[in-house]
Structures are given as C-alpha cells and as structure tokens.
Length: 293
Ligand code: HEC
Ligand code: HEC
Image 1: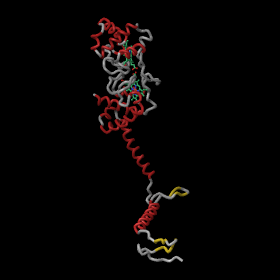
Image 2 (image 1 turned 135 degrees about the horizontal axis):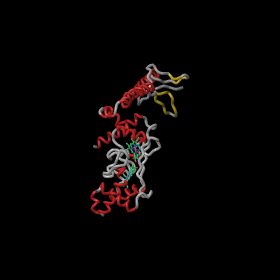
Image 3 (image 1 turned 45 degrees about the horizontal axis):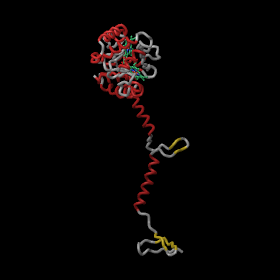
Image 4 (image 1 turned 90 degrees about the horizontal axis):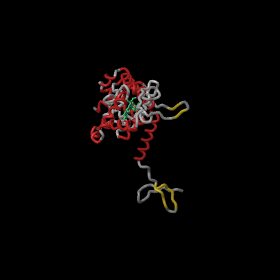
C-alpha cells in the first residue's frame, strides 16, 4: 500500500511510491506554468473562433471577424489598376509637350521607361542607353533619324532595316566588296574621314591624297552623309565629324565600314509593345538626352 508522508528535507509530500527505499516527491506544477497554459488555451480557442480556421467539406470556417487576406490583396490590386488606368489614359491622350512639362507624369515615364528599356532595349543599346559596338548611343550621339518625339516614336514603332514592311531603310554601301571604288580611293577617303573627327591627323598625311579623299567623299558619300559629313536624317546616315561611332572611329573599323558596308538592324516594336509603351519609351529616351545636355 502506498503511504503518503512529508519529506523532511524539502517539506513536500511524497507520491507514496517507493523503489528500493527511494521515494518520489509530489512536486506540484508551478502556478506560473498553469497561468501560461490557461492563457494560451483561451487565446487559441478565441483565435480559431475569430479568424479563418477549420477546414470543412464545403470550404472553411471563415471566423467571426471575417478577415480574408485574399480580399485584401484583390482590393489593393484593384486600387493599383485604377491608379494605373488614370495615368495610362493621360499618357495616351496628352501630347508629348504636355507630358514633358508635367513633373508627375515624367516621374512615371522615368520609372516605367527604365523598366521597359531594361527589358527590351538594353540588350543592344546598353543598360545606360549609351550604346555598344554596332548599336548607337541613344543618349549623347547626334541622332541619325531625328530627335523630335514623333520621329523617335516612329523609329521605335517600325524599326530600321527590319522585317516590318514600313521599316526605315538605311544602308552603308559596300564600296570595296562591290567594287564601286578602287582600293587606293578607299584608302584616300578613309584618311579623309579620319581627319573629320581628328583634324590633328592631317599634319601626318599626304595633302594631295587628302584632297583626293575629299573629292571622292563629295562624289560618293556626301549624297547620304551630307556635304559637311554631319549626317542627314533623311537617309539615316550618321555624322562622321564627331566622336560618336556606331561601329568605331579607328582607321581599321572605318575602313571596314567603307569596304564591306553596314546595315544595322533595329527591330520593329509595333505589336510587341503597346502604343502606350512606345510613347513611354520615346519620352524616356528623349528625357535621357535632355538631361545629358
Ligand atoms: C537587336 C538590337 C536592338 C534592340 C533590341 C533595340 N535596338 Fe534600337 N537600334 C538598333 C540599331 C542597330 C540601331 C541603328 C540602326 C541604323 O540606323 O543603322 C538602332 C537605332 C535606334 C534608334 C534611332 C537612333 C537614331 O540615332 O536615330 C532609336 C531611337 C532606338 N534604336 C531605340 C530603341 C528602343 C527604345 C529599343 C527598345 C524598345 C531598341 N531601340 C531596341 C538595335 C536595337
Ligand atoms: C546610300 C547612302 C550612303 C552612302 C552613299 C554612304 N554611306 Fe556611309 N553610311 C550610311 C548609313 C545609313 C550608315 C549607318 C549604317 C548603320 O548604322 O548600320 C553609314 C555608316 C557609315 C560609317 C560608319 C559610322 C559609324 O558610326 O561607325 C562610315 C565610316 C561611313 N558610313 C563612311 C562612308 C563613306 C566614306 C562613304 C563614301 C565612300 C559613305 N559612307 C557613303 C549611308 C551611306
């Protein structure tokens, strides 16, 4: 028979069990632990009643408070769509100058434009739009096709040398490969073109050869690049007198351009980007240019 007795050392009652003379103290659960357990139980029970909790056959118990994260998300998505709708329709309806004069709309242009540019254009033109070999700098270089907003939007829409039937067409002829100019004439005109952006080179060159180069240029190149070689937006031929080069301004690269010709391809974005996005990108590119000057 178990015999309850009080332990002399701790003053606690024993459980009455005894194993080979070892007795077990009957230590009660501390009241703080009881308090914690009771509070936690009350809290969990009330939480399952107030909040969405138990699964059922036809759905789940929604809780007395009616809290629903999905409703909250749908609501904020709807709010964002309404806000977006209001600025998209303004971008669509306002003309370029009005948008450019509106700081709120331009903040949207900068944010949305940067994302669109990164996704669609940066692979060729570089993340900072400053170009890569073969792909023009859109920020600082003089434009080949014109920098009024309608022209830029049109370039983005139809592309250059691409598959769209409306695409802009621009080709640098292959004067060497297609035997339009003799080798010596190519060397002369290449020297002349070098001196257009680096006049200091002329001192080290033969004056007669440079004069021949200038007249070859006037006869063969000026029609597209202009008499002054500053480019012509009608033909899309670039300015050859500055320090911006699509392909390169060193002698070997210039010679390559003249010998083999060039025809860079810019894809058409109509159908791939919405008219709103094309307009945003136009404004974005022109904004980068404006901040550069
Ligand atoms: C596959 C490469 C490629 C992609 C992608 C690309 N471009 Fe181009 N882009 C070019 C090339 C190459 C040219 C120059 C073509 C030429 O005139 O020979 C060009 C020219 C342009 C021009 C004309 C520049 C001038 O001086 O008139 C604009 C504007 C332009 N791109 C904007 C964009 C925008 C905006 C995007 C993104 C929607 C984009 N490009 C995506 C290759 C690309
Ligand atoms: C039919 C019009 C046309 C004629 C003629 C022409 N060009 Fe071009 N040229 C272009 C176009 C368009 C480009 C731009 C090609 C591109 O970006 O893909 C170009 C590009 C160039 C480039 C490369 C520029 C760069 O930024 O890297 C050089 C150099 C050049 N031309 C020199 C000449 C010389 C020299 C002649 C005369 C012997 C000449 N071109 C005649 C249309 C022409």
